[in-house]
Length: 272
Length: 318
Image 1: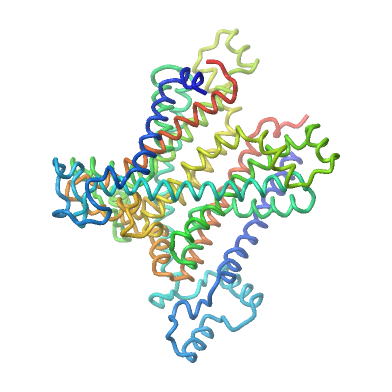
Image 2: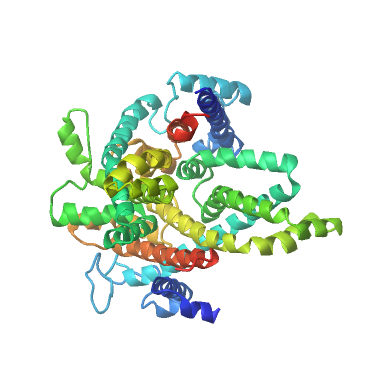
C-alpha cells in the first residue's frame, strides 16, 4: 500500500490531498469553524476580511463556516446515497448473473427502461410527487443510480461466475447468498471500487445540481449547491460569493477523478 | 443493404417499444406513489365534496387503464390537459418553451460539433503534444465542474466585468434572429463548453484507434501527408463512433439545458419543469417530463441508426 503510494504520480497525490482535506473539513467542521452553522454574524455580503475569511452570505452568515458545514452535509449525503446505490445495484447485478433465466431477463429489462429516461428528468418527476425531504432525495437518487451499478456488476459477475471455483462451490452445495458474498464479490472488487469513485462524483454533482435548482437539500442546512442558488443574485453586483461553494464542488470532484484515473491506470496494469 | 435495413428497423422498433413503456412508467409511477393526488393538492382540511369534484375534474374516478389510454390519446393529439397552478392549457405553456429550448440546444450544437471534431482531429494529429495535454486537462475539468459553476464564471467575466453580454437571457417572438442569438450567447457558450470535451476526446480516441491499423501504415509507407491520412483515410472509418457520441451529446444538451436555463432565467422547457416541480403542478411535470424523455430517446435512437448506417463494414456486406 505504502509502496504503491510512493510510486504514485503527482496528479494522484494531489487528488488524495484534496480528498483528505475535504474529509477533514467534513469531520471536524464544528471544531474548525469560527462561527455556528446558521449564526448571523454581520452584514449581508461583506467582503473578505480577517474576521470573515471568505466574507458573508445573503443573510450575513459567515461563508467560510457555511462551506465547512456544507462539506459535512453535502459529502455525507452523497456518500450515503452512493453506498446505497451500490448495495442495491450489486445485489441486483449479482442475482441476475448467478440465477440467470427469468430473474436476469426481467431485472435487465427494467434497468434498460430506467436508463432510457434521462436521470435528471426522472428524479424531478418523482420528487415532484413525493416531495423534497432528505430521505426521499437519498432513496430516489440511489435507486436511479443503482441501474448503472447493476449493469457493471452484472457484467463482472457474469465473467467470474463462469470460472471453475464458483462451479465447485455450487457443487459443494453452497447457497446463492454465500456464492455472491464469498466467491463473486472478492473477485469483482477492483472494477467496482473504481466505479464507486466515478459514481460518487456523479451523485455528488447530481445532488448539487438538484440543490441548486432548489429541489435538493433545503435551507437552513448548509449545502454547497443551495449556497450557490441562494447567493446567485450577488454576482450581478460584481460580488463573486457564489463562486466559492461552486468552486468547492468542482475542487472535490477533480480530486476524486484524479484518484480514480490513477487507480484505473494501476488496475489495468499499463506501464507508462 | 438488406442487413442494414433489418438492423435499423429492429432498432427503431425497440425505440418505439421503449417510448410506450416510458409513457406507462410516467403514468403508473405517478399513480402508484403514496397519497391521493387530490387530497395531496387540496390539503387535509378540504371538504369531501371538494375532493370529489376535483377528482372528477382530473378524471381520477375512472379505472386506471381507461385513464391511461385517454391520457395517452390526448397526449398524442397534443392536448396535455390544464395546469393545476393557473388553469391554463399545458400545450400553450409548453409549445413556445420547447421551441426555445430546442433553439438554445441547436445553437450550442452548431458551434460545439464542428469545433470539437476539428480539435479532436488536431489532438490526434499532434498526440502527446502540449495541445493534446491541454485538451485532456480541459476534459477532466469539464467532467468535474458542475454546469452552474461554468455558467457563473462566464457570467462574472463576460457579463459583470466586461459588460459584453446580458446576464439574463430573455427572448421573445418580437426579437430578430440576431437579437435572439445575442441574448442567448452566454447560455449557449456554457452548454458548448460543457459538451465539447467529451466529443473531442471521443473523436481523438476513435482516430488514434484507427491510426494503429495496417492500412494506415500502408498509407504512411506510400508517403502520404499526415493530414491527408487522417482526414481522408482515418476519419471515414472513425465516423461511426463520432456520430454516436455527437448524437448522445445532443441528447445531453437538451436535458442539460435545464440547469443552464435556470441560471440565465431563459424561458425554456427546463425552467418550466423546475418551476412546476417546486409548485407540485403534477400534470405539467408529467407532460414536460415525458416530452424531455421522448426527445432524449429519439436522439439516442438517431445515434444508433446513424452509427449503423455509417459503419462501412455493414454498408458493404461480403
